[in-house]
Length: 237
Image (tube, rainbow, N blue to C red; front, side, top):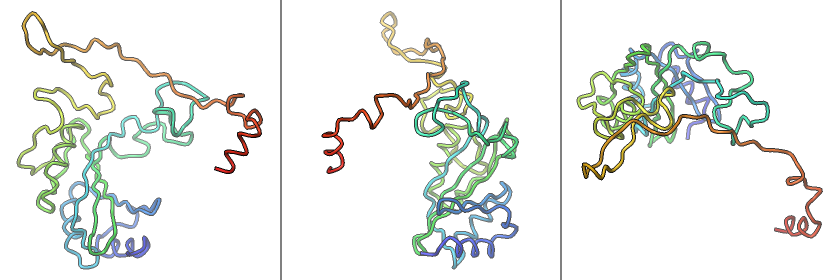
């Protein structure tokens, strides 16, 4: 298995102008390319003898519209593990400070023969009508992955021959993984005894922000209050 530095050098050698668009974190490499170059870059990654990224593991969409923002004002909610959507202390004030556009498409690649992985990120520059070229011509397995990203986030893939919804119901309106889509949805389904059929109606759940779960330091979690015999049993476990 090639180490991260070796893989990075090979990527810079094959893909031009990659110096400032390559990052390595937690043992993984991410490269950012433009939508106009995604097909040619993917072809180079697949066909290069040094890389041989022959397998497309996954394609997913990302909505950065609320990146680094919180849903409530709190000083006690944990920023990891328990609280939801709590912003980072040093995070950007708005998505535009960190990213060129709201939507991005992320590709996860695997080279079976070389045993290394790669992540590619492409930003769709039009927030109102996000579009990225389809990579079906490079990996046919992209078909359903792109359909899923279109269904859940509304990202269009130019060149896709059968771009239909995949996860949601027939006649579904909107894209449920977008950050501005309500958590409770917009419509609900129920059985109507009068018409004796299933009908759709506007959702009756009142939208609300869930109360954050907080890790509290009190006597219930103090090690001094644990009986000595319990401490001994836990240490011997």
